[in-house]
Image (cartoon, rainbow, N blue to C red):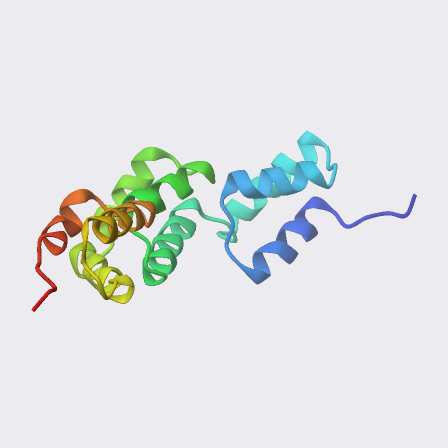
Length: 148
């Protein structure tokens, strides 16, 4: 078998393209069948040189996903599945200068149907929840009367 790249070289290759959480990198290394020890050493080196940082990854991810129109609940769930600590997720969402109400209103208005009946209301409610917004981010928008 040909000699493959070292785990550190592989991490540098991945991180040159985008940020990854520590858990994502650990999974990628495992998939490439690097030894546990080699993977841990490469991850330690990446963090020591600040090539990989869950804090930076989390902040970038929150900014990116909110710009794509996703609410805090959805982003929180996605980050949790990427192995980010709950305290870090909560801290990052708090520190992010995002007006979730404004974002919810923008998404709501983009998707708002022509006919505003009970069926349309239910559909919008499901849409807004699936986007990860809290009820109080968009409840007042649901009560507006669009039949003017």
